[in-house]
Image (cartoon, rainbow, N blue to C red; front, side, top):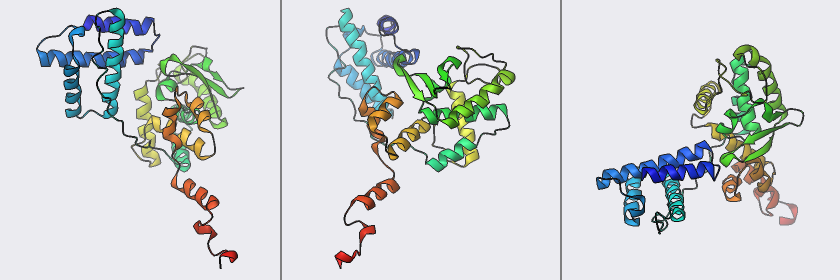
Length: 308
């Protein structure tokens, strides 16, 4: 089993050009299955000998352990890909994961900050300290361009084009896109970069990381998450807010102000429009304003002279 997993991961790396994060996710999912099979059966079976019945028992164990439906769905997708590779390689004739039903994901609306709350968050970092300038630049960039946290920490100096107001982003699956930078984000980035060389002893250059810690090392995603938690507390905002909430807010605010969904899809770097459609919800106030303006018998149109 472990040998087959290693070959599959190498296939993802060499032939599919998958990102290290993607490979890490597949590795974790497949090793989790191997561990469960070893514990349940008392031995590690050949991968081609695993049956749908055993995989169904594995999925049931995940449900009993309290795994989220989205996590179970991801593991099933990993197993199907693994066994499709096995069919190609000839060590299995069937895909035992194919008959298993993927759990229906709950369509919870994403947590979104209002425009006023975004303003409070962006004002929270201290503008008279190097790290405060850095933190504000991070938050402004994430909200301005709708970036994922991994995309943000992966930025290099060569990705920034202040004259054009754009940033080159390396997204999921190593797909690149160009994202716009608003004037506030450009100004925040320029202020941070002006002090970065002095505070972190980083010389500018195309490969220099944009966001670094006090020792000049590229920030990690966990460091950005901790930074956000600190500023949420200062701003008195909902502690459920995550770095991804800035991306959710970016998309929702664009749609609320009339952007079309396909443009938002491109800005977010979503491969499928289905992924973007979760943002088509609108705020209650926006929905009521549309209703008041459009419906012939809305509350604001009562008691017209012609109705008496």
